[in-house]
Image 1 (cartoon, rainbow, N blue to C red):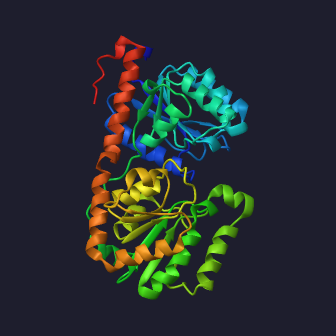
Image 2 (cartoon, helix red, strand yellow):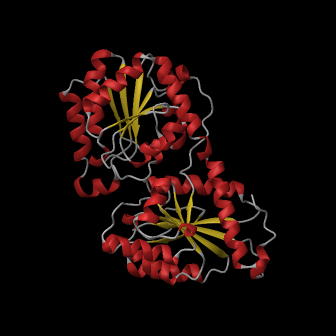
Length: 398
């Protein structure tokens, strides 16, 4: 086939299932939607970031694997991409831990060798950077055609703390799923949670998630509502398992037992598939977000809970401060066990207030549905394709 007759390919670089992490889920959800949306205009493929650096465990649309923690793999990955004439745009999911070197500096070797136009998305943007982080982020932004972030706060930090030109930046929110209207009673029966008031948290477990706070608060909540149950969904973070096994999960189980909460707190040691996760969110009365990091720029779990129409009680952090107000959720100070318990009790006592809060959270996230997010990406890809060559001017803008 002649090069000009090829359907242009967009290559995403990021973690991808079966790897179990938030960015892998994000990459899969986004590329699945883009594949449906752009089936006639583009092929969507994946370069999976994986220390094992082999394709045996991956299926389509993964076409290559790169170990971001090995410099020679980053160099070889860039060369392979450059040599593929079908690839027209590269879209990179950035998190500092995905690449080796100090603060993930190996990414610069990869990016500086790329001859293809590329877009990069920062999943984390930290305030007041030191000189090394400042130079790294500025170098990445200088090399990129566009830089994506997911919140206004991250946009402001890049402009004010890192000195990035605003015309280089694009805000596209984290996507959320459209959840079909479900019968909450039927779902509670399905998961053997009949007649229970349900509080949930989900995601990979690690000490910075602050799960202890929710467990301790449940002692007070359960005294008021003996039928309440706190369902904690997710296995231990793989990096933590490598270094210390299941020590953290075992400490949570001891905390549950010490507080006589075995009937009121349930640890579900699984990486929950999306469909099952959405079911759990549909039957949730209150979603608890107890992460300890006030600078956390994004949380897919938080966005999914809002989009599912859950009433949310959250520690104060960047995304909560941007998404929640008195109508859409409750923000507490990190570590305030009494505030968490008292607000949960208030919402469980007041069904109308809790349900209205969930509806307002649902409405607040309507512009974040994956279909909408995918179309914003498509417009950005179209813009870059037109800059590359007038040959592509006839691609339909969505």
